[in-house]
Length: 515
Image (cartoon, rainbow, N blue to C red; front, side, top):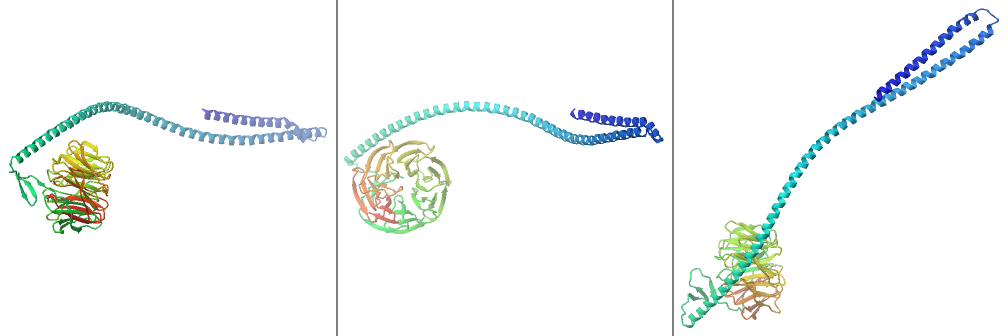
């Protein structure tokens, strides 16, 4: 509309200029016609009128020049206005192009806005759906939480009932044991000495097939062999079951088997990739398992010396290992990754993992193979169900880290040693303290210093940081012997199932055999 208005004004201006030019020309022609008689008269030789006509001619000529000047000015003005009109037209065209571009952008933006509105509506529908699902999930979560709380309350009630039943069973078992001891005393007093046992080299066996040895242990007094077993220290030792052969593991990554009667080396097991921190052996004496600082466990065949398994799964050093007392198939281990793992040696892999906030330094199976006993850095003794991995009970056993656990032959009591330099004996059925053993000079050297019970459960042997081995009577609670042959810290003690000898491993790598 603006463009059409401007064009009409330009045409009007042009027509006005043309009209003015025509008027000037017409006037000029009229003046020429009016003055033509004068020119004719002037051409005549009239002397009387010559000066007057001459004056008029000059005036007309002046007027004509002025008309020409006016025409020139109008022409210049016309040129300027034409130039301005062209510039305005170009500017108008540019603005019209800009307006077209803006209209296109506006159209595109409107289309995008429409698409965004459609997307927004879809998103809002999706959001409403999600909100609805979220509300439904919240309802389900509340229902599940309520069920979990009810289940937890029921579980707690069942645990309390189970603990009460266990206590009642323990009381009945104590009554049965008391009745058995009374009957045995009566039989012995009446002269019925035909018990199902026979004396063989100081070892008394039960007559029933498959029964374990019952051993009268003797208090050792002298060192019969001082063996340089390992370089850089010996961290773990144990005897084969009902045998005088001693198995040692050292920081030199080797496991060695010794004849304690002669002090001679019988076999070396190689292939461990780190320092040996703990050892265990199956009850048939066929396989040895080593816990290593390389985060792995290694299993060897004792007879052939061949490595059977490398058990991987821990992510930090493995510090404790034990084999089930019921089946040689199952092994339990603990590491400084805050886990306890159950392994199946037939399958060669982990079957269950227990996670806990405090690292476990020592552990062992119960006699029935259904419970794991573990001693932790926080000083607590804990019992776990092997099938579910559930914590059954716990007790604050020591004020510092527990370093060792040793189960009694009948499985009713357990010895725990700690960095507080105390050795406590607990009733495993009630976790009540049966006795506490200590000595002024006895100082536990490391977090994995191992003490032990004698095979008849009458004595406790524990090493000290000054190289001494202290022996206590469990029933009297006092020291019945002190042994010392090496000045370096004692890291581990182990008592042969035959009742003697006792072995001690030292930080220097020396192993002493005591009889």
